[in-house]
Image 1 (tube, rainbow, N blue to C red):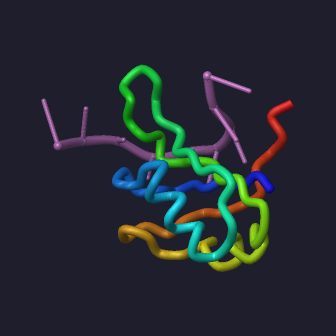
Image 2 (image 1 turned 90 degrees about the vertical axis):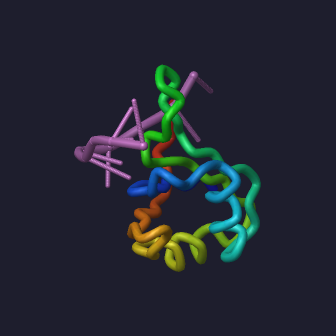
Length: 79
DNA sequence: ATTGAGCGA
């Protein structure tokens, strides 16, 4: 299951994102989208889960992380 | 050291 995570604090990176979601499901891949030009985080990322995806979404959506409320949703197919 | 509406190569 591909999951979109928005409203991320600037302090979050790929490993942090994986750790956060790993508490509520099985993570296959976790990636924070960073600006290729400046290498700074864009404030959102994507998490791929093999199990517990819906549970993680419900558990981590609107969850407070680093002082910010995360926005978790199913990612849109890129086509 | 900075930014904040959104979906990645």
